Length: 196
Image (tube, rainbow, N blue to C red):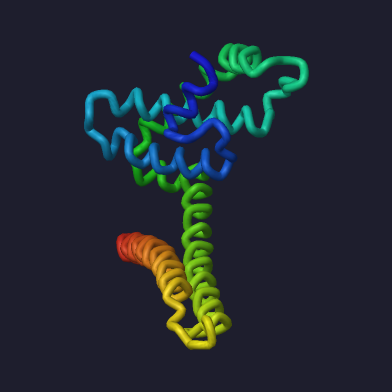
């Protein structure tokens, strides 16, 4: 087993950064948590996901004190495996025994949830920016071009602006549906809280 095994468990590329690792962990942990997923291998899969997350985060932060310059990635993996694997599995087993609602309140899940929510707002703003840029582009190019002394419709510019606007709308719809879903969940969670 090598480092790429952990990237495959989380379903991410080997050049993923810590944000991508956290998002992949949150997605996979939610999918395979034994309290939600009743498949036979869900418990083991959940533990493997936690182990992969802990290993990759440790590798990226190098918090174990292993000097990257002195060891190869393979050496790092073997040393980490000896020192940390059992610890990672114990922590993952504890998380797997939690009810999903308890797991959702854990710092790992909350942190990745907040990052995901921030990304949704970023995509919303990006979509608005793209649409504004498309409008400015069309305005600056104009609907007509002068070609051989005649005014002709700027078909290429119009099509390009339509495609850019569609891309912007895609970002807006995608992020807005995720934001609405998040808000609905938060409202349902508040409604479920007991009143004292």
